[in-house]
Length: 242
Image (cartoon, rainbow, N blue to C red):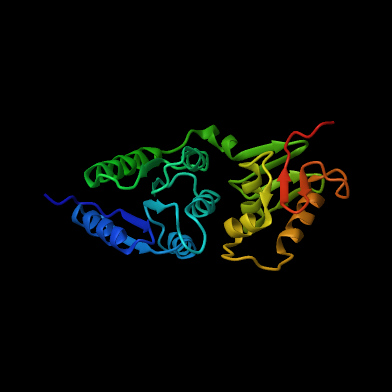
């Protein structure tokens, strides 16, 4: 018996046979499907189509599934994401879960089990769309030092007063906030926030860091929160030593 469902599921998978098989079986269950064969097109189709659920492979051309995952989570913390991966290494699973994966299945997978998990994830997502408590806005606020950032409104209170962050500033800042104390390479930041798929020569990132230091550091020339890591990239330290 066919289900009366209109949910759209985005499948980001470079193996054509797996992608087509998943799409067919999901459509037989009453879902709409969209397929992307690499990281950049996956992010683009997620932005354009606003699916209800993402099925995501880890090993992708362009940039990998973990970068796709982080890019999505910078804008949407609620959309359910199910990762499929041939990788069995536990650290890859831990990374995925730490970046906000809702469920994880190793290849080869059982199709009936996958369909059941998809159904459960979508039901859980429906429950999470219930109106939030009146005080839930506090969850969007993040404080470090004398600075307060509100990701829901895209504003911040800092040494320069109240400022409005651009979309890219908010995405980059959130990437640092969810990775406190972790060195982030320039390439990885450009990949996740700007969608660059290869090494590029650009000063874009450096310009944003300069701005962050002007906004949030007491002394921009001696930064405590937004630190440069030589030959690597940058690190955000929300609680530096006095």
